[in-house]
Length: 154
Image 1 (spheres, rainbow, N blue to C red):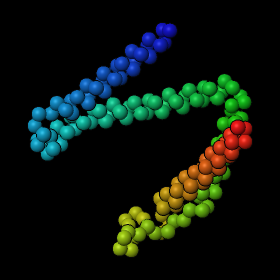
Image 2: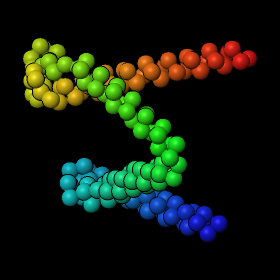
Image 3: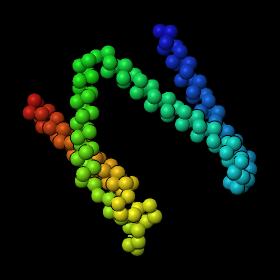
């Protein structure tokens, strides 16, 4: 019960800080000088960006730490997690071999700066695209399987 109160206080504190930073943006009187004065923009907008970035990293860090703690407490979950990571690794290797590192062209057929043939960035972008396609196909197959299984049970 005590941790619930602490969590509620923490949530309220985060909300108040975020609200104050957000309201500072609307408190700008002279919008013309705000559009042109970089120091004024940094003074008003940068704090909310830093606060949001901190909250994002904190949420990711907490999620990772709690996941690792949960996995270590239950060895069966550790086996399932390692198997899942191994499957994702195999799919990543498969996607890497499907990807190419051809030159990236604009609408006039000219090579875009940084998109030269053989670039490792091109290779990894292609890998990401193929990885997404492969995971989407697997997810679609499991969705259809679950749908068919549900129809058979009915």
